[in-house]
Length: 185
Image 1 (tube, rainbow, N blue to C red):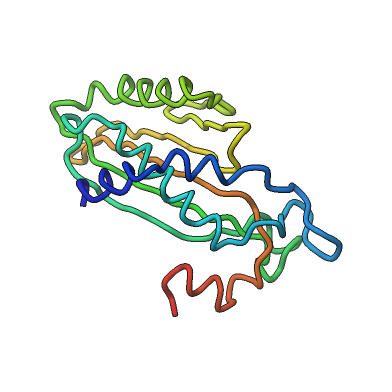
Image 2 (spheres, rainbow, N blue to C red):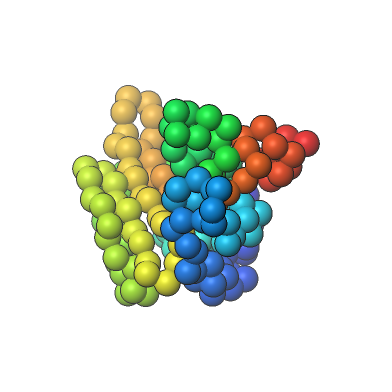
């Protein structure tokens, strides 16, 4: 699977992701504040996934043991009080990799190098916490979050890459559109 992720990432992911730019922060009349109706969830899904794969392809293979988990789903952009039907949604793609035990000590350096590779392409650090960083780019509506977890007991250290697209207007969490994109139909 790791080889497949690398192959997909090489098919021009960066250009595709940066093409998803300029999304409005507020849709037209009758829409939910903060949700764009200029872009659909379907249109944002591939660029979000491709950016996740691009970030993963930049991890040095010598550090990686395996891909522990991949996720692709839409998430609500606001709480149930503001949007009870979950119409304002964002596509989120994630990848967690286990780090080889012999390389666990190098995880902070690996994530720092990964962050630097995006900073060299005009991404900026928009948030930073202990073991995590969020990257944004003025030319992209997608953000990247990089997080690490240290080795605990018999568990390997991990690196988590999560990409999130813009908040867009949908027909709701239970709509055919959202279910189809999430593979539930």
